[in-house]
Amino acid sequence: MSSADSREMMLMQPLRLGPMILPNRVVMAPLTRCRAGAGNVPGPMNATYYAQRAGAGLIVSEATQVDPTGQGYPSTPGIHSREQVEGWRLVTGAVHGRGGRIFLQLWHVGRVSHPDFQPDGGLPVAPSAIAPSGTVNTPGGPKPYVVPRALEEGELPGVVDMYRRGARLALEAGFDGVEIHGANGYLLDQFLRDGTNHRDDAYGGPPENRARLLLEVAEAVVGVWGPDRVGVRLSPNGTFNDMGDSDPAATFGVAARGLDGLGLAYLHLVEALPGDVRHGATGRLDSAFFRPLFRKAIIANGGYDRGRAEAVLRAEDADLVAFGVPFIANPDLPERLRIGAPLNTPDPSSFYGGDERGYTDYPALEPAGIGE
Image (tube, rainbow, N blue to C red; front, side):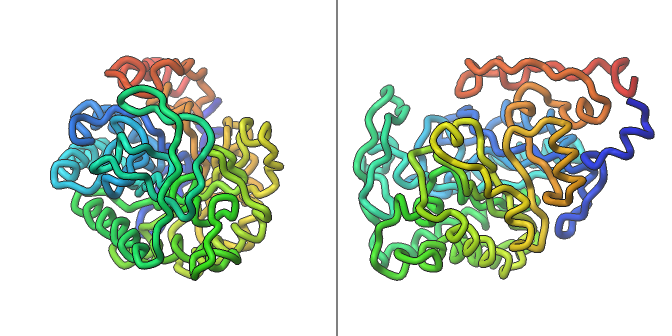
């Protein structure tokens, strides 16, 4: 591909996102890698990993629990202690040193946890006392999910405060903004969908009530960062973590319009993945569905390759495209996309946990191969 052709690529066009000018429209999706150190503190290895990928228009960090009760996987980082703030400063400093931009993803897993992760061995929390199917990978090995404890209405302001505190600590840690994780069957998604929310109070019932906690969290985080440095991730077709909803168009339409009213920087949409389709998702709630509902930037995410990414951008159904697994194996993914270079093959056995192998040792293009 010639330099003239690459300049015409939508993926390589700059985009204003809030106060930032992104040099391209390639987003590094949040990728849980289970490589935080003791105390769920990021370290130098994590800083190297993110810095290698600083060529992304925007990096969204791996999901990061806002409270000890929000953990559901081994060795995932947190943003609720001073040590974690200092660890994340290593990461943000390394990314900024390479000229990159990085948002922190704020996370609470809700029912997708186990007493082995919980302070004092307590029950995980959820909107309703409904256990997901399957097993959870605990430090002691796989164990069946337990029935969670339904949060009382009076506890929900405290949940909002968890996200507010996490947002403040992310600001101290040097991030450029934050993304609220409202997808993939975790706590805010559990409140949003009627398959997991059977409440009969102000946070249950119609979609307007089920979206209430998500919107309260978003408003609290905006109070810390301002709206133009806050995004939200949703998975309207997602079945991961035993999720479902009787009317996704109505539910996520309400959520999107509510988030639009807050003036957020972007909406990050996980479109239907092959596993979701196998479990009955139609995939019709894609970025085109949300474009009339949300006025700011839309990030499309869902197994995109170079060609599909160009198509969704040219159709103006999305403004950016997030890549997950390709970024694991290709630290220089934007450059490879720009020149049409082959991609490295990922090693799924090293996706979760471990050391530098399969984490920071994937090769970048040789300098002689760049721009050919």
